[in-house]
Length: 119
Image (cartoon, rainbow, N blue to C red):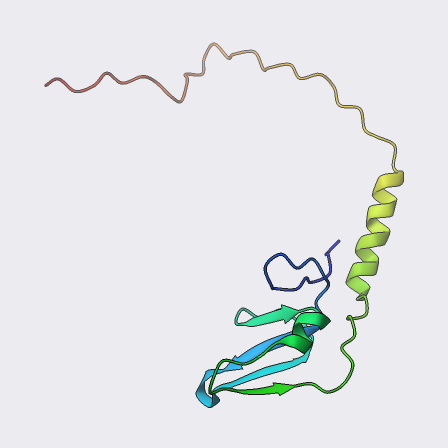
């Protein structure tokens, strides 16, 4: 099962509810609702960090004015949860003790020691 996306700030364990994107060409930082899919050049933020974020000097900050809400669970998450419950309910499978195969007299080993070249 996938775990919920976490805030990108170091040491923050909270769930992400917003996405920060930098538009370098316009010197703009945009904080909006959490993107559906994580992107490589964006940052997921919790509500606290999304609300307290400041833009670099000389940059404009565009912030979403509405409420940041955690994303609803997807059907993939629900299916994964159901599969995990089914797996936990299955009786454990007993493994037979391991017995190494007996060497075949006609087969040669695939690795062998080679002496170092003479000096």
